[in-house]
Length: 172
Image (cartoon, rainbow, N blue to C red; front, side, top):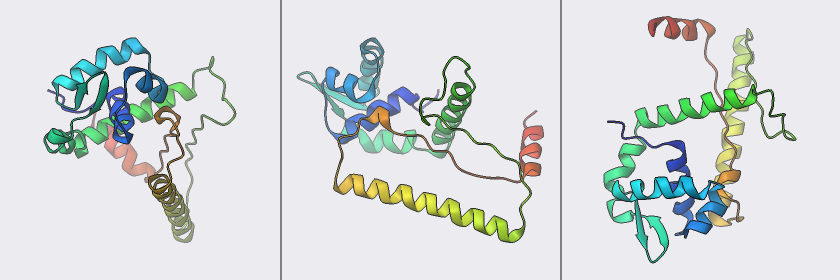
């Protein structure tokens, strides 16, 4: 049995981690259709992720220790990253959805790097990581009222081409 979350379920949990919300507030914050929410929310209550009281949904903080570690396990987070990456690739290559003012970007490059160039790349990736950490810290101390669905998904990384091909062959 898969103990991970659907991306949509994780989005609901992220939304409710800010504050409890009614169905209309959830629609506004997640941009999910009401029918989708009404299908997901009861299941999430049964799994004891959420509470429902007087029209308000909230995280089930009393049982959080029972489910938080499970949904954030390495295997479940790995599946979430795969799902996000696959969806990003599919969306980027859909011809009928043009790039909307820079909202969708996907860059995949193969390049030979010297040891010094690799050090520079690592430094740039660390700078981006520090930038993202700083943004998150600022949002904790001074929330800006951004909606959950407005978040950007950033995927970074690199690997030797040979390692990737060997991993691919090992899974065949």
